[in-house]
Length: 69
Image (cartoon, rainbow, N blue to C red; front, side, top):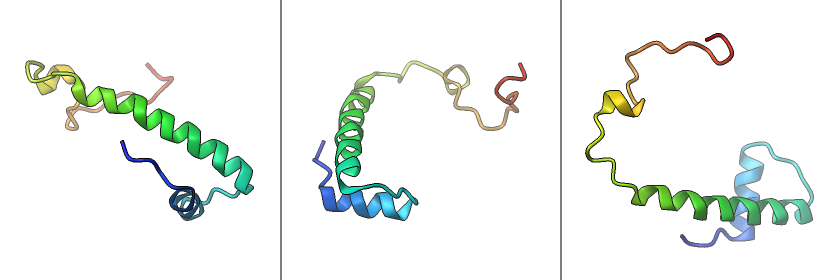
């Protein structure tokens, strides 16, 4: 995964309403970069044998709200 530049991260943070010091944004950027690296491994999981119904991806089935089931 390509590194997120400080400038790009600061622009994204501003766009989503995050207001923080440059120092805090830099710490946050490092955490987000690490998270993206860990999530990238999920793309390697072979799910070709899992039917959509069993994968929890059906959008036509109502699901209970969190904390109500």
